[in-house]
Image (cartoon, rainbow, N blue to C red; front, side, top):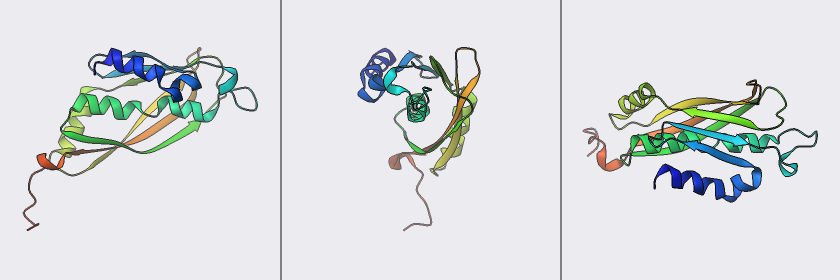
Length: 157
């Protein structure tokens, strides 16, 4: 599936659509994605700012998707863990920019070359319209070569 169709599908996906989450850019090379969370009456919390679950949801799948699409079908890629730190109240439209560089991908390939699993923490800041950090999200991604591509282990019979 090309990234334009993926972006379109993600924007129609009910958890994003109903939460006010909008994928505004998904690079053809799967190295960059930009996501917005628009303030709506149904995604505000008790005090009128962005609901924390919506802030986390806007950042949830993107590191996994970018890595999976960049590495290709030879790898298993899963979300392992995630955490969010709320730094200030989020109001209006907030954005998250995910950028995956070649050095990170090279490090992942090297760490997985022997068939071992690799866990990597990747951060993204959620920014308000003035560029201030509203929340900081970290996702831990599990990456491993698929079993058929792993070198045989001589210790196993």
